[in-house]
Length: 163
Image 1: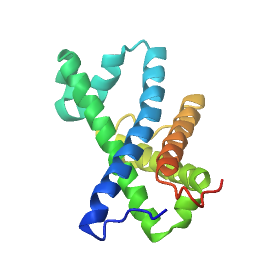
Image 2 (image 1 turned 90 degrees about the horizontal axis):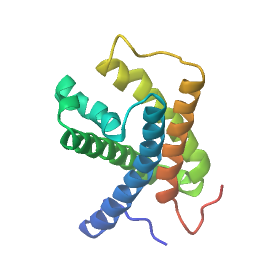
Image 3 (image 1 turned 90 degrees about the vertical axis):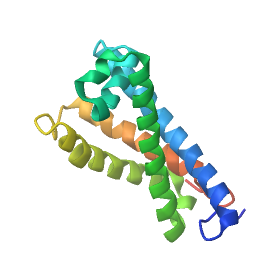
């Protein structure tokens, strides 16, 4: 199987489709995790995703119902697609990443956690992040590893992939 590349116009469409599928897979893993964590904290499904939309809308996101929850979900999957695109580009330079999706995805997930909790969240909520919260932080790390593995698994080299 030939891996789609961005080198030619003919390769752009298959590459975009693979990146989108990987973004959906990684985003779905994190959607389940964030929704479960939110539920354990007493937040409804829309409230969890309004929290993501608050990055755009501030506190007003919580008064917008499903519209802001939809914006949060769109933002969430957009970020996951960017994560998948970054992995796709890295795997184009280092094909071993496509052959070892579990290992490379787990390592990528650790990197995603570091970026999210070391840069993104502290930028958005500087008084709250970074922080270590024991089991909660450990499960956050595992969830990001799951996201990385899902992305890498979708983008794997299907003919030669090994664990």
